[in-house]
Amino acid sequence: MSANTDQLADPASTQPVADGGAAQEAQDEGAAPPAPAPVPGPQQGGAAAGLALRARAVPGVTYAAAVHRWVPVSDSSPAAQSLATRGAFAVTAIAAPLGKLLQLGDLHRTAISSPGEQLLLLHSSSADSFLAVVVSAGASLVDTENALRRALTASAAG
Amino acid sequence: MREALQQLGRIPGVVASLVCGPGGDLLASDFQPPLAELDLRQVAALMARDLVGLKALVGEGGALDLRYSRGRAVMKPFRFGTLFVLCRSAINPQLLTLSLEQVSRKLEAGASTVERSAEMAAEIAELREGLSLALLRQIGPVGEIIFSEAWNRWAAGGVPSRAGLGELTAELAREVDDAQARARFVGEAGDVIQRWGRRAPP
Image 1 (tube, one colour):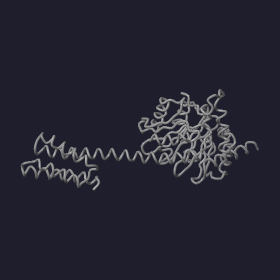
Image 2 (cartoon, rainbow over the protein chains, first blue to last red; image 1 turned 120 degrees about the horizontal axis):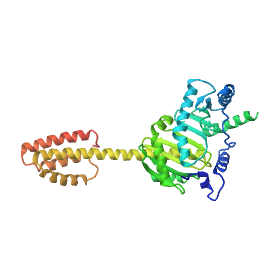
Image 3 (cartoon, one colour; image 1 turned 90 degrees about the vertical axis):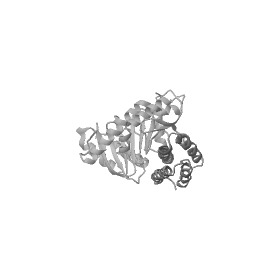
Image 4 (tube, rainbow over the protein chains, first blue to last red; image 1 turned 30 degrees about the vertical axis):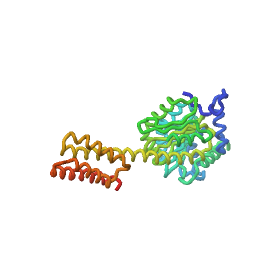
């Protein structure tokens, strides 16, 4: 199997494909390079709640929850549990086996668009930890993701 | 279907696309080397394995868009299967979204036509069997040849209609010599046509 889609962009390239691909995409979508979402572990409940709160302040975001190893750590509401469950299904049943099959590398972002709801999962360095964000139906997923990454990067730097 | 995928293939950054049925059968594909059809068959099998879950996750008309460090994969289930697109990381997301909407609408429309054609074929086969049996019951096995010839002439006339079936019944009735048997055939044929006519064009 050899999908390696970014290598296809430059067949002569012998570099690891991950570098070129991520950087190029960031330029195309007008965003900073998609750094992993900094999801704190369960021992840092306050930090996780803070991360979710910062995400909720971004325009277009209606709810956000930090999930660490499939478990919501920012709050224990049914909404957070539901996001964690849906994220677990999307990753384990589809994204992980597909990425392995086509050698697509690390999972950075999962977007679930349905007529009544939009959901973004910004994955941490491992796919089982992510910031799950509900985006209002009328908002642009691309714009919201870019704004989220800017907000989270700024707060991490600050 | 393939034409719809070729439309996607013209978008800069799209590497491969496929449509698979609910059982994981590869219905159409469009891809570039080094991807191979075998790879896409494996993708189709993977999607079929979790199609119910995927549909529950994204709902009617929704999509799952996965961005990896080395590319991007989008899945969009529709009524008769799933559309899958593999892209390079550097792709215009708005253009991709718009094109996916267009292509999935085309696929829905195409699949509806195929489905309706299959339904019509089944209904006509049922009609043929009913009329044939009605004739055979009155004149015996010789009716099979008579019926086939009359049916083929009638079917060559174009789209089946209730008016055309009246002519076919009259033609077949002329082949039944006994008046009582003829009446029985006409009555039975009328019932068969009436049942079919509830679903057929006038």
